[in-house]
Length: 121
Image (cartoon, rainbow, N blue to C red; front, side, top):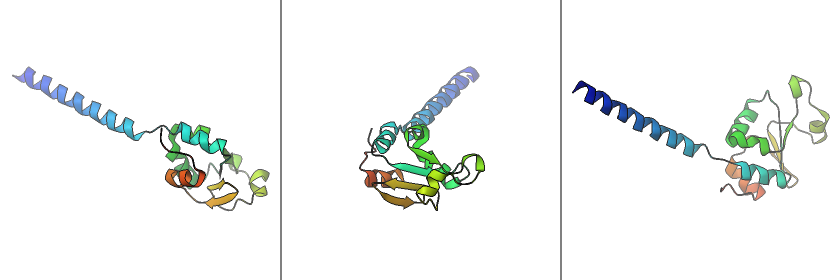
């Protein structure tokens, strides 16, 4: 009887763990196509590695952030680089979409609407 309960308990735990994995996997979407579309449309994301809002913005993309055209304005904590000065970056993050400036964190839905890039996979 004791062994039977252990087997049932083990199966129950396994089912719960598989369920958690499936739910987490569904929440972890792939935004590669969306990020690539932003880059194809020449959307620019200016930020700094020291900026917590930039880290939040990057986290929305997950691993797909590698496909976003990101410009680091304060490399290694130094002064703002000339590229960022030339476009008058005042706030991090700053996005440029179709010659318009958008300051602060933007949701993926906002970026989709502003750029015309679809969030669908």
